[in-house]
Length: 139
Image (cartoon, rainbow, N blue to C red; front, side, top):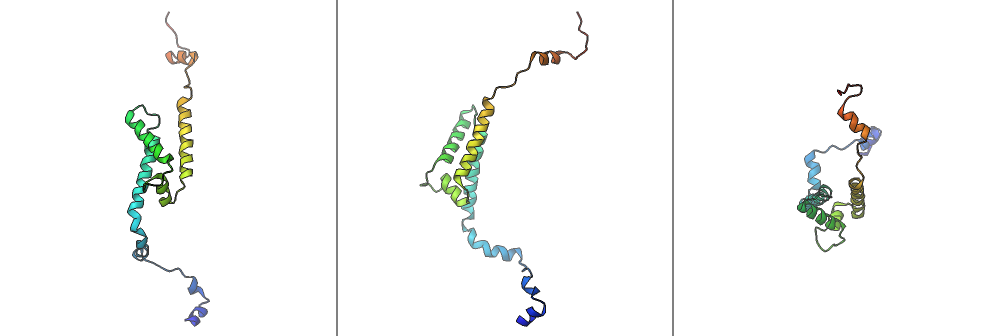
């Protein structure tokens, strides 16, 4: 065996191994025992972020409740519940403080936009809307 590797210059050592998809995924099946739980946790996290962003600043009472519940869950450091924000992030390999900071920055920008003064039309813009330049006006 060693003589064969030496004879071909050792190139056989550096040849890639070929695996069928079935062979690859059979080796990783043992790790998938909690895959359903991880997918559920990801869905919960996605829903909370979606509710937080979708209903921020809404006038609808149901939307305000969903947004505040999502924000409360995201900002909580409670680890006693399996599906707490911190535990979900930990299981998914995410940094809770990084996500919180990103959502708070997003919220600040959205509130700034909402509170920014709306541009008003000037008198010359309003006048130009009524008639075209150079048109005759009947007296």
